[in-house]
Length: 271
Image 1: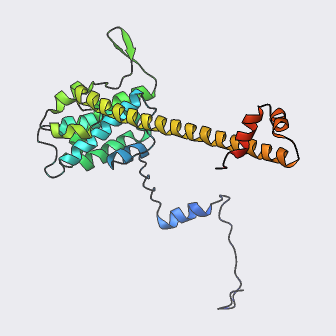
Image 2: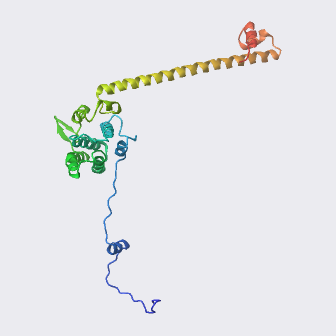
């Protein structure tokens, strides 16, 4: 009964269809598909922010391209006031996208490229970004599918594999100025990297030498301490035997030394 008007409530069976609560809500509230969440690669995010994170396996080509991307981020930060010089933005974005294609997740690569473009080349339009990076996405997809390209009689990874010299040549000194070289790990000239390694090795050698010296000093100190403790124990033993009424000759015989040595051991001052 309806408590307001006192009338009986009747139900009507209209059809045999069963509707779930979500389906009813969609009909009443007008269904709108949820916007997909943006998924970013943690390694790429950390590189953009100049933060350290777990990078790809050290010494691998993936790790090298991760260093290249980190260097490119550092170069972009250096030009943050005026931005990347005119005429170089397309090349710069192309190289950043290619570096990303080597270590970023294939599923998030396009999102990463767009985020990179917004961060470091904001002057480019959406159409320009798509035009410059389309070959990168195509080759990254081919690599994800396990395809190989033929080059000079060999099967190689379809992604672009440029040398550091080529990258520096493409960007030019107006983008990578010599005062930036100390900050770069992959894009600095080889002689700069070799000199940096020599200095690092010298420092490492000095540290190793200092550690060796400290270990040697500790070893000698422990040996001296052990000798002192052994001498103190022999002195105590000689005095104890003497207190038991043995002669110095008998003390020496018990200890396996001469009578004179037994007297000298007993006279030793404890340290």
